[in-house]
Image 1 (cartoon, one colour):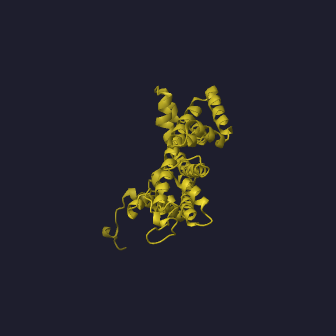
Image 2 (cartoon, rainbow, N blue to C red; image 1 turned 60 degrees about the vertical axis):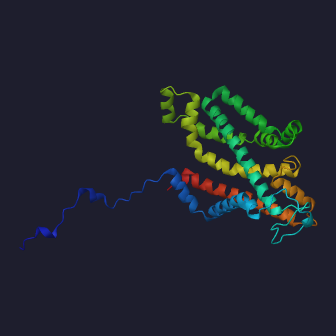
Image 3 (cartoon, rainbow, N blue to C red; image 1 turned 60 degrees about the horizontal axis):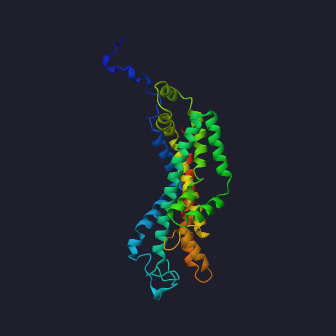
Length: 305
């Protein structure tokens, strides 16, 4: 029998015995969510549209080098042209610049109002859920009472008492807007309240607010981001509706709603004065809603593979 030579063989490391085992790389929650969001082309298009509209709203007035209050008496109600891209209004003011400024103000109002709603709603909902008992019952009744009051009546009372301006408008937008966030956070924290890390924090003597802020709310951050994406378009619509009804900002302050209101008055003769603010508003609302749907799918842990 021919002797087998050792060089025909190679020692195999025992660590290679599991070489056929498929191991999924360790991906963080946020990287996984971003990966899933990028696979949603409609949501990515909505994100690009939002970024472009925001950039144009910021740099647009600097491109035209025209102040939004500058009146050109010889160009009243002039249609779109190379000089005035969106035309002019009944006083001769550049409509492109005013749409950019109005978009900027509407976005800022929506962002600040949403931030206030989220902060109040998270703290209120966290205290409700974690405390429980009669405290939860009383605080929940307060939420139900606020939701039962017609929004327009509350707004009218605030505007009559405080007048027009940024502060009354923010109060009107936020006075009941946080209740939805509070309900959402309460439901999530009720699920997390009996978790091991919460029980461990209690055993170490952590205070109620520390447990809520340090342990419970960070685990609801996905829901909070989703709530922000869905609240912003709602606030924009509410602010626009108030301005359209004459309950929002007044001259010389204005927003997209104010431009829509003034454009509606001259719609029959100069439809472009209503068309361009409407297009911007529709782009904002649709983009935020589509992006919110994409974030909902991306941040839902049930869809993780």
